Length: 475
Image (cartoon, rainbow, N blue to C red):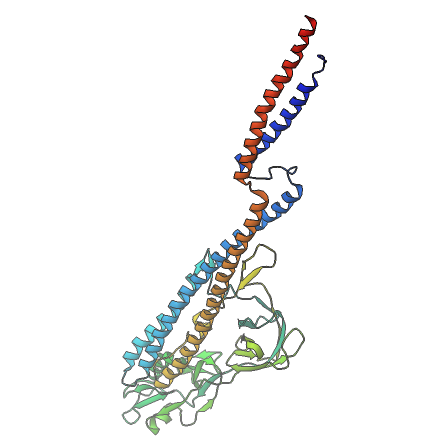
């Protein structure tokens, strides 16, 4: 037996140290709840779990993004719902205005409400926002760049792919006008000349005793209600003169296009002669003219265009539609060409996934009164009111189409959210299996190591007592 080196005590001490390390590791796992607390525990598992942790956090944020996108859509939908309601009221008023039992004063009241409703549409468009981003004014539709400032895109469907679209405007739209043979005099209207003056079915009473200046002032005031200007001009309207100047008097529409007209009727021949209607000259309004250029990245060979006034509408297969507005008089001095570049930028992009490229672009076109075609409705004759009903119906269809598209977006985002929740749950379960401590198993291991620790302490005590037996040899 040896007393200088107590190998049994050293062996017990080594075991005690290892047991203490195991106890410390078990306590660390039990207190943190994690099975891997350092790379040494499981290097591969730590690398895998770190990647999973990042993905889980990305999925959680993407789910929140999807809910934000749903909130944006619901905000836009609230504005569109109110616009739908306004259009319904406008249509009701247009139908009411189509009834000729209404006096001019009645139609004034109807027109006033129509105008205010159109302004309210623009007010809703300007105020509907989410996080300071306007939703209905066209800021969230695809951007376009035109090489000609006189030609601008106003509307695109989602079927219009990014690219460069070339067109040439060969003729500008014109206004309808009627040039009278009126020669100014300071005479007054006689009883024989008194009568009704009609423009596009709208009546103006010319009464006995009115001076010619009063006559034309009356015409200016009343015909402005139906969008027709009355002026004396030597050059078709660009330079106005006083009626007393002797310049020809013209009646001209404010709007452009083949749907514009100036139809004049008078009650008697003497009134027609007085106002120069008998030898007047009428010009119909015309639409602008344009041609498309077929290219690989632009318009296809099946694309076709129609024009109305200064607006060009290009349609093609699969729902392709582009509307372009031409500045009045842009092609008066010759044809004007433009390359319209459609960009991917513009729509509201919602990051709907944890990885790059997992996105949903929300495209919301402008729904201003002008874009909907209800900014210049006229209620003063049955014919104008009927045209207004048609225009409002088209506006209702457009708003319905946009609301339908927003509903599809919302459904997609709801589906995305549900899918993200399932992915997050599955990956979290896998992450838990790698990282989380099995508390029951680890507690059992801790108890085992604790008992071994106590046993090791006892054995170290016993091994230290063994050398005392040598004393008996010395006695």
